[in-house]
Image (cartoon, rainbow, N blue to C red):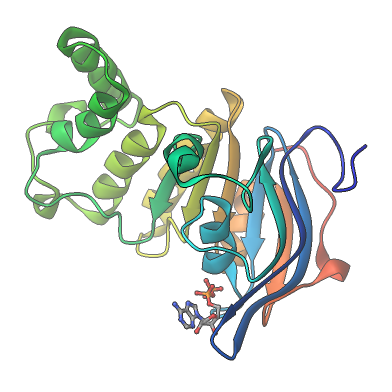
Length: 234
Ligand code: ADP
């Protein structure tokens, strides 16, 4: 055991607070996320879910407290090492954030290219990723011509392209119909079974119920400890 919890935690937050000016977005949050956990971060709009996710990959920095991600102390990490931290993450957003002027293939390939492999390997990997999300036959399509569900499938392929240890998803099904939402959840489950830690922010309790996993509830910036439901089999 360390001062911040169990050794098997891939994410350790210790007394973390985040203020935006006078606004307390997160207050005194201590939370461990286990390696290969499938975790929901729940709570109403404005509860601090997005802020918490951003703190993990240094999209924002804490006002107080400490966060350790896979052994990296985020308060001490040098600017030069931030890309190293970011490569540990695959990030999925509610509004997909695909590049509209690049086709499906390129949207995924850009991530793979950044890792620096040869063209043949890139082609193989991108095809396999698009096959996983069942978008291989749309690889030449541009994002605006796709449905929301299809765009999010591409975004999932892009998120897992760098083989990240941790997937963070911010309301990934917030703009999708129930059927597309289940497809996205199933893809996240597949990646979880392959060993990734998955953290999903959502206020959709029905989605949580039908998917399963530990639920951590935020309310007005506070972690609601009474409702931290023990981890279930997922
Ligand atoms: P959630 O994702 O649960 O809806 P957020 O993390 O987006 O919650 O927001 C938590 C609180 O922090 C809200 O009151 C929100 O208005 C505020 N907030 C978030 N981002 C900023 C920002 N960049 N500047 C000022 N206030 C912010």
